[in-house]
Image (cartoon, one colour):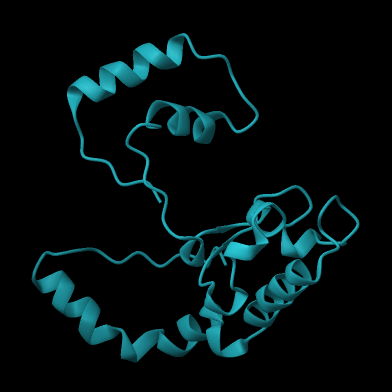
Length: 145
């Protein structure tokens, strides 16, 4: 999560610093971490569990409290998970990957079914109100999901 208050001076400092900063593996993430290092305030792992925390500081992680998992470690993407990559054969990671698949396969969370069920007459009053208020326009498009 990145919360930022626009500031022209900060913008110019960002550009100036970017010009003299060598590229890194995680480009913009590394740059922002470095640039804002003195004002950086991480959110708790419960709301942004970075996978590496599981093997670096497992004593600080309570899986039953975790709300958001950042699958950023090599080999940790649930849809590509094999368990063979370094640090990926752990039981806690297997639990998180399984939770991801449980959510992915939960049909009650299926956006496509919701759109199909909501299309047509159910949306019409909302669309008409938006059009009359000149508050928005509706363009039908295929789902990206």
